[in-house]
Amino acid sequence: MLVLQILIDGFAISSLYALGATGFTLIFGVSGVLNLSHGALMVTAAVAAWAASSVLQLNTYAGALVGVFTALIAALATYFVVVLPIQRSRSIPSEEKEIFVLTATLLWGIMLQELIAYLFTNNAKTVLPIVAGVVDIVGVRTPRNEIFTAIVCCVVIGLLWLLVNRTRTGKAVLAASMNPRGVTLLGLELNNIYIAVWAIYGILAGIAGVLLGMFLGVSSYSVGPLTASAFSIVVLGGLGSVSGSLIAAFVVGYLETFTAYVVSPAYRTIPALLLLVAVMYVRPQGLLGRR
Image (cartoon, rainbow, N blue to C red):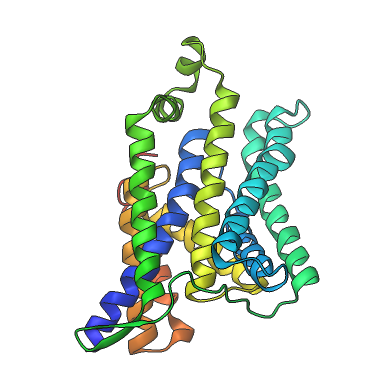
């Protein structure tokens, strides 16, 4: 019974991690940006959905849409306000711009975290689930919302795969990730591709954040752990590798779930961090990374 419980809960949390890490990996693979405000964007989406439902009295569906839209705006603001000015700056040496962007996104995430705490306090917020009730799966009582969360994550990841591999926009994104200069030679505007990627990332982070708020609840204190989890997953899977991130998300998700049930929830992140350290020693590029 415990094994089945771990399998069910682990699949749901792993799917959430996979959805969040996919967007994180996408912007790094295309624009080379490690966005350390990732956790803040997810929490922003969840808190916005909670506020829309609890404060503005919108229905659950409208609240979820508000949360996703808020994350989209926050992601685009991250690009235009934080990342782009540094990338275009002539006063910052080219070889130092990456660390400047890394630091700037970290500070941006802290600012969003403090803003959330100031406006809505540090108390945990739980978004009303879209699907209520409990279902019995071979003797294991499982919230319907948990199953809904896993299904939505898998569907969204599938839609992203179709977008990237079956549409003109997706093929431009793939080309930009492989050869940015070649894309400009083909007459495509690289900046427009970056904007599209950040918009896609914002939607993915928004959906993951809202679902997380429905599944586990969030607070301003969730920002750091969420960013750390996403960073660990993309490094473990291989920077820039979406497939590697998906595999790593399920490895980390199940490790954390197993530890929470068998040992203690307080130690759930430790095995994944130990695995990350081991992989960094044995295979520094990650499971499927090339750089």
